[in-house]
Amino acid sequence: MKCCSKCGIWKPKFEFYKRSTATDGLRSWCKLCCNKDNASREHRYKEYRKQYQSSHKKEYYKRSRKHNLHRKYSLTIRQYNEIAIKQKGVCAICNKENINGNKLSVDHDHKTKEIRGLLCSKCNHALGLLGEDIQILRSMIKYLRKFV
Image (cartoon, rainbow, N blue to C red):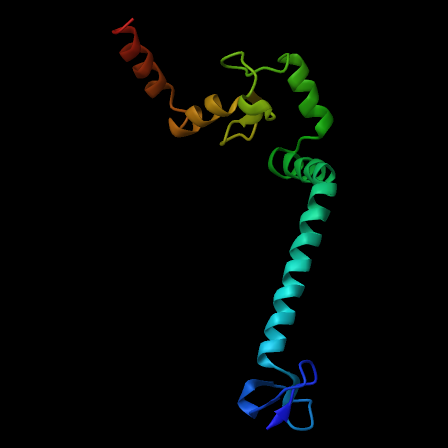
């Protein structure tokens, strides 16, 4: 038997977690008290993390966007903004703003890595799904014209 230093209740030794550095090889708190403490600590940490993320969200987003543009396309934020200004802030294909007000995606040639322009999500996904195959695009246009 051993007394838990947290709750003060005498309990069998199997009710305590092992601790190699303790003289008796057991923790001073029983398993129940350890588990309660861990749960409350985890809850406090989640609240802290949620608060921190909400207060630093914009800063984090700017840093990660800058990093990703440079890593993926060797573009700076300034270069991205220049392209967006040339396109008047709209998609190079459909001339619409991106859905949900998100930033336009960088379109590039996957072979040469050359940047072609900025696209909305729909146009960017369509090009990707079609494998950037001009023949498929022509076939799609031909198909659609049958019904117009």
